Length: 230
Image (cartoon, rainbow, N blue to C red; front, side):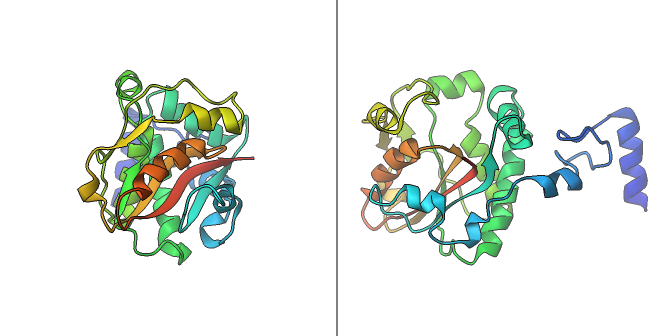
């Protein structure tokens, strides 16, 4: 009762609305109301082996498990979350998505024995311009739920690449040659790494980064993302 009264008082002086529907019936630390959260288009991939995300990497790199939490479509709430995260400086969107992935990981029964979370690296120039790496924010949310440590600097992105949204799979793959580098392989030896990104399209960037991780002795690789394009 007291908590509800405090929340109502804070809403009066610091209005806080759901990003999806505009409702103010939510706590100050919430991004979406319960109704909008339940309407997000879940893929079910975390519970299902041989899902489309895993199949995207068949014959490309060795992946233990792979999944994305939501379907990404145009003019959807998932797209708005990505816009908020990548272009409007909304860090809370990244941590919210990470927490949702964290809950999915804990209940999936498939992603077991993960030792480290590795966010897909951004080029330093792009990260400086944006102010953060959106994948690192997602990792923070996952770590909050799953208590898995984050390793931010073992793998780095040493080349700037332009947006690949209009490129086909082969062009994306060629564009990623030589982009990544493992700077601190000792931290990855014999570890099961969960490589994390925001949206999976062709998977070319994750494939390129993952191949460098797998070049380290004894590593195992799994992949998780907030959304999957259909």
